[in-house]
Length: 222
Image (cartoon, rainbow, N blue to C red):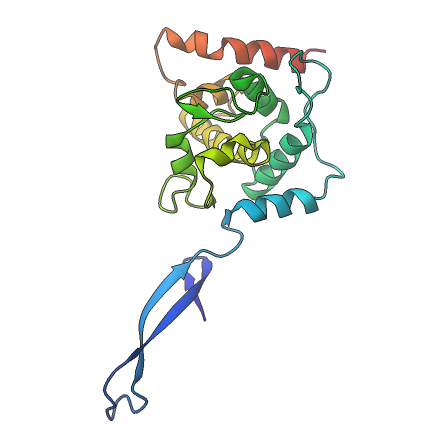
């Protein structure tokens, strides 16, 4: 059966419990528990990530700039970046939208497009930490309105999984940055919030943004 919770409708699993037959319960069966399960459309698991990408309407989506970066495989993931930016921009009605070039420059600065950079504290092409991986899958956490499900740390070595997860997290950080600033955030401000440094006075702040600034500049230069 279905049960409304706020504005969401979730599937409910009912468990029959046998009890003594009585006037109030002549069948001897009652319902013991009801466990809510999240509806499709409030999360993505491995198979849904594949299905969304495979069936996505790519006719009018915005791609990141090609032939500007020098790393091997620099343009290999442009379609994944374009699809998932468009997907999450539409899902969250993001205005102004998250630019694909921001994502591409972030990946360039984090991993140089290597799928397994061998970092002990982060994994995959987008260098997602274990802490972030947990946050993106927490149904009661800061991105609870749309999470990922059943993604393991080793799955982050697959760019087709890591890229949508990074973009979902970056979308969240964009909103947080704009809330703190009271205006639209620049590309650098979004990345600083992504790195937890937007309001920091640390000397590391400039170093943390330096490579992103260089790669983003290449992608957006006229």
